[in-house]
Image (cartoon, rainbow, N blue to C red; front, side, top):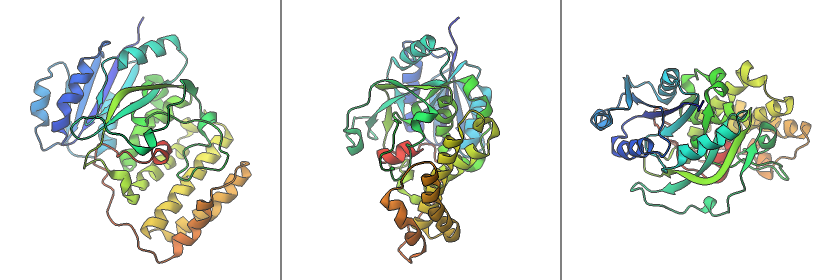
Length: 336
């Protein structure tokens, strides 16, 4: 019997994008079995948009942030396959048909990840520097194959492959059950929960642009260094989750801890906050990498100095209620 599909959309004041988002979901060549929109207390015309889609389940809650909306959407979903979509993005017509076809052929894997077409606020394609390289061939991504990837500063001679956009993951519900509920502090990094849950069982990468990732003024969160706190919270959540860790090798857990140290050090170096913690993290990072047979980047060696020097720090505060993370450099995107 074919697996059922749930599509989860969390939105906050994105009425101007929501119509296109829902039209592309409801117009799939393989229609979803249910579409759930959790409105996190929007103050725009979101409710009016939803009235034009009577088959979509609309849930409105008080404004509590993306993590709370994500938890609510997942708790309401009943599909065997769960797909997440930001309200300001949209899908190509055959996304679900291709994803479900691949999952049917590979019943043991955790999910599918793919590439995205990058578009501007008006929905027209844009070209980004880090998207210029050819996509790798389709493959199964595993924890062992990505554990040396995803550092903010790439490691010399790192082996493995991480590809695709984390917010495109369609995962089997069974691969996500021990990941929810996620804590409220995780903020915008919750998209990566689908990736982290599914990759433990194998995550099929498709080099196809089956969705569009929209760039606009309100989703530029990774341009603000303070937003890295969300990734720190995400990595701390993974390391504290015993159900998550039992599927991983000691080396993978150790390198996840190394990524956490790197982010803490980077955050301290750019904000001037938690300097002692960041400095300690920057000093421990090269040692931990060396224990795993890896060399650090030369940039890692500068982090202790950058943590304590009275440099001009980054301003601004990351907003955990924003519902669409920004496009960053390819390194930052994969580091999620």
